[in-house]
Image (cartoon, rainbow, N blue to C red; front, side, top):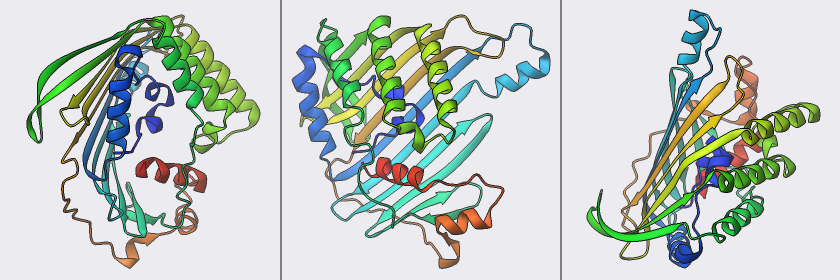
Length: 319
């Protein structure tokens, strides 16, 4: 499957998933083969747990922060790219509220079901080009160069219980330290702002974006990255059938209300690889379909939807 939803959640986290010297060829071959899958199912689960500096805060302020201590992202996809078909269910939880969205691609038509409205946004006419291209290549190059400095990869065989039953698999484990992680994160921050990636997700003046960049840089430079571990499970046929990534981030010199720590867990699974797919699409009525202009005109109380953002979202969902 060729989707990278972690970009949506966190560009920084996304680029902490790779491999190094001794396991490089095995991992790269499996990644390349997995990216070429035309039919199958994929699940991605992201969980982020946070703690906050509550010194000097009153009870109400602490209660408000408790609503923000967990982020969940669940993605369930079924696809047949030979038929240009995909059905992706997305669940997002933050601030004590959960939201469901649905991405539909069926032949030449693509729709995004809008949470709350329960209407379908027609995004068929948005450009299909990959808006990211090689934007983040400097980040992946930095990551690989760091990992090649030391042998941080171990491998072993195991039996993995999957939706396809018990499968013999090879495990590639990657562990890196604080300084290695921080170098890649700082490269990702610079690339994100310098290549105008933030324009797809954040609207603001140049001064505001520069201030945001400096704030994030200072935050990460004073952070400790601990317990990073990635496990990649490769089956007998050379496909990646499961990946897990965990990492702890501790922020130093925080002020009351700031995030003190963050624990990130990401799990992705692939199955039914290459098998015939029967995708049950919802019945979409004409009266339930909106275009971008209609949505913005008819719902002034809903934040304006940027076409570039929707284009990037479509590109990510289809990759």
